[in-house]
Structure formats: C-alpha cells, structure tokens
Length: 368
Ligand SMILES: NC(=O)c1ccc[n+]([C@@H]2O[C@H](COP(=O)([O-])OP(=O)(O)OC[C@H]3O[C@@H](n4cnc5c(N)ncnc54)[C@H](O)[C@@H]3O)[C@@H](O)[C@H]2O)c1
Ligand SMILES: [Zn+2]
Ligand SMILES: [Zn+2]
Picture (cartoon, helix red, strand yellow):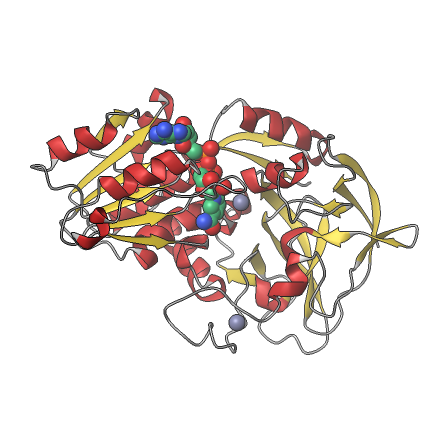
C-alpha cells in the first residue's frame, strides 16, 4: 500500500514527508493505522546525526498509538480494531529477560531492531524498490506502520489515542522509574531533577506510590508549575547549590529517592549526592551525550547510596502499558497538560523546532 511518512534522508536536514510503499504484515507482524504520535528527543537526536548508531534513510517516530488494521500469520494476541500503543521496548514474554521480573530489556529482536530491520531481517518500507529502515522498530511518523506483535500493547479503547501515545515513551519512562525501578515507598521523600515529559512522569509516579515529599528541580518556572500540578510539594530552580538545598530540607541526610531526567551528567551527579546516606537510591533516566561519563566520589556509595539506571522505566510494555492507561482513565494520572501542541504529519519539522525552543512538553502529530 501507499502511505505518507516522514523520512530522514540525511542527518542534519529536515525530514521529508513523502509517499512510500508499505508491504503487508508477514508472520508475527501487525499492520497498524496510526492515530497519533508524540515528537520526542530521541527522534531529534537521530535526525541531527548525533546518535552514533543512527542510519538513513529511515522513517522516524516511536511514540505512536493507533488501531490494528490487519494481522499476519500466527498473530494471536491482537485482532483488527484493537487499539495499540507502540513499544520501542518489546516484550516477547519468552526470553530469559522477559521471564525475569528484574528487567524489561527483552532480548528477542534487539540486534535487528537496532539496525532498523523487522525480526526477519528485512523491511516492509520501501521506495521504488529501495528498502527504507524501521526506526526503533516503530516508524510511527507515518499513516501506517508494520510492527512485530511483541512490540504492541493492547490498550483500553476508551483511551483517547492522542493521550495514549505519550505512554509509548516519556510518560511511561518517568512513571515506571518511580513505580518499577525505585519502587518508591509510601511516606518517603523524593527529588526529581528535570520537569520534561520524563521528570513530570516521575513526579506523578512518586505521588501514585504515596511519597510524602516530592521536590522537583528544573531551570524553567513554567515547567515547575506543571510539576506542582502533578504532585510536587516543593519546587526549586536548579543550579550549583541544589545539593546543599536538598540537604538543608532533609536534616542534612538527603532524599530517600532521587531521579535524574535531564540527560546532563552534572545533574546525574547531583542526583547521587542528594540521595540519602544509608539507603538513598538515585535513578538515572537521562541519556547522556556520546562519550560522557558520570563522575561519582566512591564515598557516597560506601555510605549507603545506590545508583540505578532505568530504560523505559523498567516497564514490561505489553503487560504494564495497558495498566498505566487504565490508571489514566481512572483519573489517577493527569495527561492533558503534557499535550502542548497538535500538529499534522506535514508539520513534523515544526515539532522539532518547538522541542528545541522548549515550547511545551510534547507536540503530538494527529493523523486524519
Ligand atoms: N531512559 C529512557 O528510557 C528514556 C526515555 C525517554 C527519554 N529519556 C531521556 O530522558 C531525558 C529527559 O527527557 P525529556 O523528554 O523529559 O526531556 P526535556 O528536555 O523535555 O526535559 C529535560 C528537563 O531538564 C531540565 N534541566 C536541564 N538542566 C537542568 C539542571 N541543571 N537542573 C535541573 N533541571 C535541568 C530542563 O529545563 C528540562 O525541563 C533525556 O535525556 C531523554 O533522552 C530516557
Ligand atoms: Zn521517546
Ligand atoms: Zn523477551
């Protein structure tokens, strides 16, 4: 079939929205009609050429939500008409990692997905016979996409898809960091560094876990206002004195849980240093620049602090994304303030501009 899609032709150049060919889903694959897709930093990171593992030509986009149109042979967990959220982090439910509750890093299709291929090593996307790769196994800046069954979460049909798409990446990452990775205990004190999509999700996750104090740190007063809306009890403008400010608030001990959601390695260090002596846990969500390292004085660890990393919030996507969306529908998570702009696919580059200008939390592309 012919589809319109936003193609990364050349690093550093704007995406080009054009007509491509999309082949039918093969065994274990699903054809999805996209309804909405968020524009995320990872798309821009790859488009810019900064990502050393990036490739082109490819169709970007990974924060998608849509409706199953057709299924390939052997697909049993989805049927036409089902509403789905795309998962760049799949869940096969069979590999060593999927069977272990300690991780969400499914091993089933990692290598091929990282290279932009579907599990059988080929692509369904093409143009005049030239194959076009599937970015993150999702390629959701497109009217339709073909994805592996194991990379689609079947979600409640009552959820508006222009909200559900945020659960495909940043929002679930933040929520999961608090709920799965840190497993925040009721009554605890939390600090979240960064109030973008991931940090705001972490604030909401800490609130859902019953944290008593939630401090949010950001450079933008507008974003801190959003953090208060998600449950932050104290907000502070970040800077070199942030660690001292947090120690002053916690009788010199530091916070039970800290979360880093900025991608800045200096802030990661602050997250470690403001975690509580004895048991404080610093959870790192941000993606640092190529070659950057996190500098930690070992004394912070010997005196009982721990550091954890979190990919997609430790969320096992097919099991947990539907559950998080049910919590949203139950009124536990306020998603509306995160959708700052609505765009058409033709305006996808505008989404990147808005993101670079830090205008709003997420731009969402809607397909009509
Ligand atoms: N681990 C994962 O699976 C995963 C998934 C999605 C995104 N990410 C990463 O998470 C990070 C955050 O993503 P986002 O979409 O929320 O980004 P964002 O750019 O929207 O938000 C980052 C926030 O950090 C704030 N900030 C910057 N410097 C700061 C400082 N010194 N002190 C306090 N706050 C500061 C900014 O003002 C901004 O509000 C990025 O690095 C992104 O690549 C990770
Ligand atoms: Zn993303
Ligand atoms: Zn698996």
